[in-house]
Image (tube, rainbow over all chains, first blue to last red):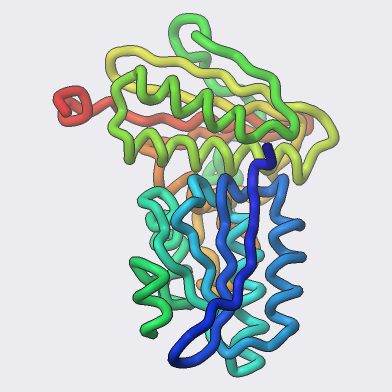
Length: 116
Length: 148
């Protein structure tokens, strides 16, 4: 089984359409290039909102965070929003310590993220 | 900066008392490194949150082995009634004496690893030279940890 699996969806939405990237497993230096490819491909489609669902992510290191921060920069430039949803405690703490939670919105759930 | 204000670069760290209770050589299997640290930290009596702090710290240091060296690294693990120590030893060299001591810019896309290590651990010892780097991460076992 892969250490990290990603799945991409563009759910039907009553309000604004958004892209949902769900991460499952552990994101670290050994798989952050794969994560980068997935995020870059979605960011390139210029969605107005890209939500990364972290609810099944058990671990994230600084390499994976940097991939997300780079995607966030590009989304910013394009006038879109990248949001994180449902981080587990260890991931939430890491986002806090790096102050990444000051750079991009972090929501308790995907529902809250879509409500914006 | 006067050289005596720089951290010791040449002498190696004093060895913790007792033999390392566990040693593990790793290269790309960081997930296994994390699982081992989590298991030992829990057994030593750290709370889940502090066990996960130690997992993050060790994983960040072990990731540097992959990034900056061509060889494997060694994880050693000690514990006594007061603390848990995880040590990562590899062939890399850290030349910046301030490594991890300054908060990276919020939007920096590098340099968070050692910063995180220093944030979550109770004590971090670092010894680096031409022959390699040893980083020892200490987590105190607090009374509150054991009682929980």
